[in-house]
Image (cartoon, rainbow, N blue to C red; front, side, top):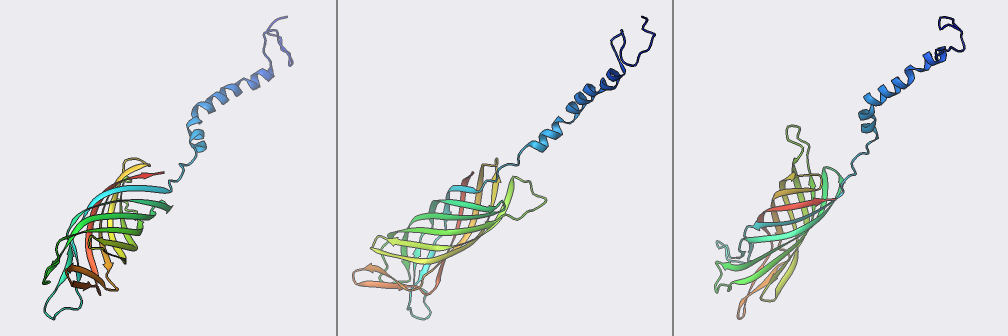
Length: 236
């Protein structure tokens, strides 16, 4: 039988109409797998898991502040002043959204107090301020800024415990307003710099012992100080 003879079902030359119809299919499959795997892989890749928690140890510096003495003679400004000194602490936070952070922050300043325009003067004493604040910060989106640099605004509220070596201690309401910037080295690690105004409500009045039978009363106002710190944050 010659290969020139045509039979619809078979051929001694080893091909048929069915073979001619199915031959392009493997080539088509190979072509699709060559062209589309990157697209399919991208579609199948899961979204990164949101990072909800932040931990930030920090170290900074706090300015001095003063507590007004009450009552006092008109025309004078007697006060008990706290010296400026370094401060340190740690904060733990939760992110309900990527751009919002709610933190619990503990900060400590180990410093000294002295009196101004008071006779006899209070001898210099050691004072420790422990501050416990809830911080609420927001990172607004700024189109022109790179994604790894995120400025933020901050409001905080809580209490401050003041302890003096003369066995004087008290806890008062405190608050703060500030701003800062976070630098993201990766999704999990970064550095932040923060500046904040902090106020302590010295009400009701507090008594400071100034030696012997001398006692001064401070209160009735907000004692203000500023703070600047730098910290390394870890996200998970």
